[in-house]
Length: 136
Image (cartoon, rainbow, N blue to C red):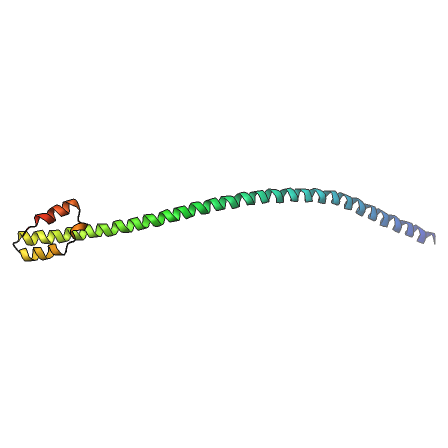
């Protein structure tokens, strides 16, 4: 029986020691989790501030993008207008050259016919000078 009592006391001592170790570990963990909670709260606060800053920067950049897109549309329309104007001037140059060649060749009817297809309001100053020189 003494052997059983000795075993029982040993068993109780081991259980008590194990329980004491668990209590100490839980106490240390609780302090650590409190620190972690405070750290996480500060991280969340910092991330919220950063998120707000990034959202405001995103809005600002979106406004800039919209302004640049609008400007790009204006530039494209200006470019298209200049392209059409350039094509008109080139066409007028070709027609004037054909009319001058016909005029210099003595074919006044053909020259007059070509001249009638030219819009005198779309001519440049130099082209208008040549246009007015073609007199029949």
